[in-house]
Image 1 (cartoon, one colour):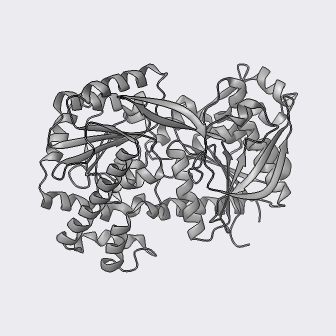
Image 2 (image 1 turned 135 degrees about the vertical axis):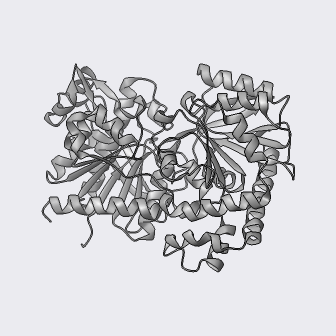
Image 3 (image 1 turned 120 degrees about the vertical axis):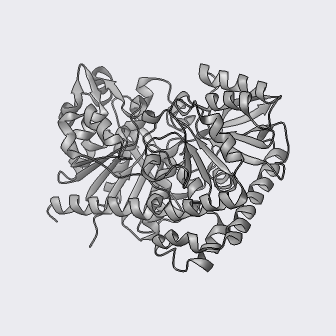
Length: 521
């Protein structure tokens, strides 16, 4: 083999309809598609959850329930038993249909004899420390057990977030020379879990010696564990490097960045056809997109009109199906579309955007929201309450059950993509990239990867982190003439090679090869 064989582990992966919830799941799907396209020997393993959350509208309220998940995967015909001091768990192996050299496996939790809570679990739906620990244990042990069963000796273990760090023990037991790469996807606490030593002993029967570097103050810290064994630690944007070096000064020499990107499958088909005609060879050489300025304005304008029309038709369809809460059933022709589609959580600031719409929103625009929410949390409750109030005054909508299909139409058909997290809390973000590669303008706070490629007034609009100028910037965007908008659009497209997966995966491949050579192969 002339390439290192890499095993990637992630708690979520949007290739499965029930196994993706946030940006990490979407990123893993993009990574798989790039590896598949390049015929690269890479395996991704994630859990397959029996249930998923479902939003439904009741009058002007959105409620979230749990429902049995659809399965779009192929049954691989293998079952794995993962044993622990608590109980044995059976995992059924499924495979994503496109798999070839690049393979995406999913370990299904919902088999009949498993614990009742596992049979009803959805991604990140655990209720206590023990459940959180066990799901990470099942992924770690199950993935390595699958490799043994298939007699696959991987060269590099790539840990996507510290949730996967428990795989270090079985991986090194399987092959002590395995090289480990660790990617940190968030500075937030949910990406840096720890477990009490009592829980570890209860599950394992003892404290595995491999875990000792991650133990302090009576707890096992997964970030410390992963960082100790990793030959390289990567953040997902350049600005996050200093944050991680300050968090882990002992490992600062290992820490650098490989900024996130998206796969070109996110580019709308109308745009792809235009690029095929005007930028021949762009699919093989993404840097040809830098020549987007050569495309005549009217051709860009026609395609943007088509992608918007696609969104308008889809919106009408979603509305008929009860998948939209709004005060309009169709998006009017001559309004601007501003979209905020991401998890409804405090640091992403959807409520703050909603309040600005309430105070300054224009009748010449519509404002679309979408994303995962949990009505039991105080912030989400306030968001829903405010949304119901603003619904009486402004043209706003909430698209329910946000998924990759809905995201595809929203990122390519919305005029403006609103992305305003608290800067230091968002490590990278990728939704703004999906909008940008479609020639759509991002309105964003300066964070993560945004500051690496968005130039204010050129291919996007930057707002202050305190949002004091957001209303002014929204008004500016609304006032853009068609000619001005098309210039922005061309600049977005010509900037897109940096945020496409060819660049990101190319950088990771270099690291896989370096680790492989260090292994002495």
